[in-house]
Length: 81
Image (cartoon, rainbow, N blue to C red; front, side):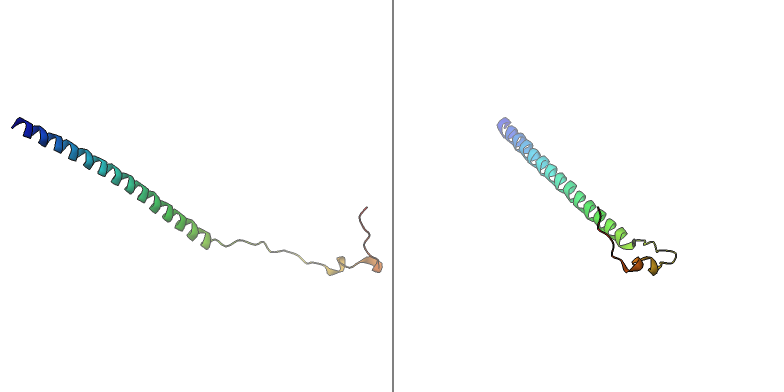
């Protein structure tokens, strides 16, 4: 009778250890899953923010005078020295 009780206790301890190991692995899986979901949500949020923002281009103010572009007296521009 005593041996039977010892065997039951050993079996229960072994079962408890295996259950603890299973729970530990499950906890790691859930932590990894949470991190993956967080990364996906963060990337979607960044993508959404980038799509809403358009670049602001500053327009040129004032007039641009074409006569300043023309070469004076029909001469060519000299080469740099």
